[in-house]
View 1: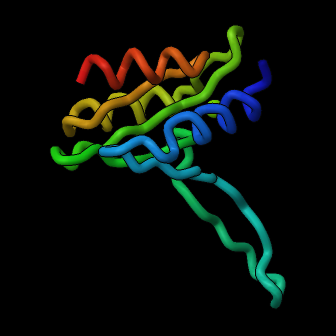
View 2 (view 1 turned 90 degrees about the vertical axis):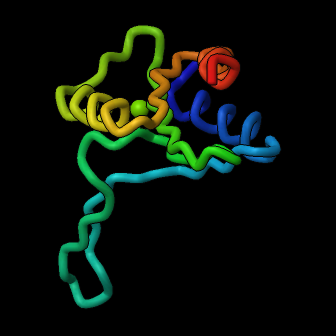
View 3 (view 1 turned 180 degrees about the vertical axis):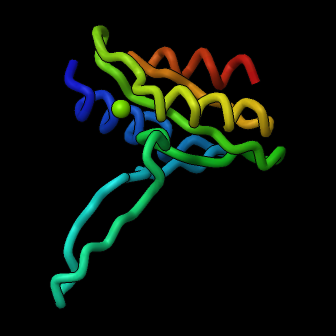
Amino acid sequence: MSESDLLANILLTFGSRPGLRIWRSNVLVARDQSGRVVRAGVKGQADISGILAPSGRRIEIECKTAAGRQSPEQRRWQAMIEKYGGIYVLARSVDDVERALSAT
Ligand SMILES: [Mg+2]
């Protein structure tokens, strides 16, 4: 499965689950209408971000193919999220997210 298919499947599977809100989190560089460069997001942030009720814990989901590897920036993002008590999921399947949620 491609990373974009996995991402879409995760959003579809968990997008309406009670007690969980998740959203796409893009990192991008674009130009606005006047030609100015606009950057959005933080390099290394996960593909999907979210929040769990009632704890308010943050969840970050990095989607990867079976062969995909985290960049150094993504590993640093994971370390930061975990250090601050968030949940970081390196997801190679929808089931990986299900397992992580079951463990909370
Ligand atoms: Mg990814």
